[in-house]
Length: 109
Image 1 (spheres, rainbow, N blue to C red):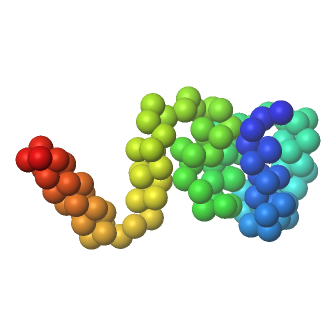
Image 2 (tube, rainbow, N blue to C red; image 1 turned 45 degrees about the vertical axis):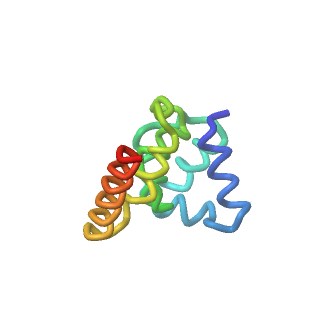
């Protein structure tokens, strides 16, 4: 079973979404959605793109869960990137300034 299917089922069990919501928001027919979920069709890039849009998750994260991309070399850095993705530019600039300041502080010590 593709790990993305398990992950989607977990999101549904936790009440974060529903099969109808995902099927509708992915742009696929319900039949196509259910074919993928029952493993009668493969998890594809386009399916991942639809799931990403439907659930508001970064596409890269969905592709990694589906094992269509290799795992990140540094999962902590990937987590930071994922958290920053939806921040306004000024907040990203603030975080970059903080990281630069912190790095310089560590050099002084």
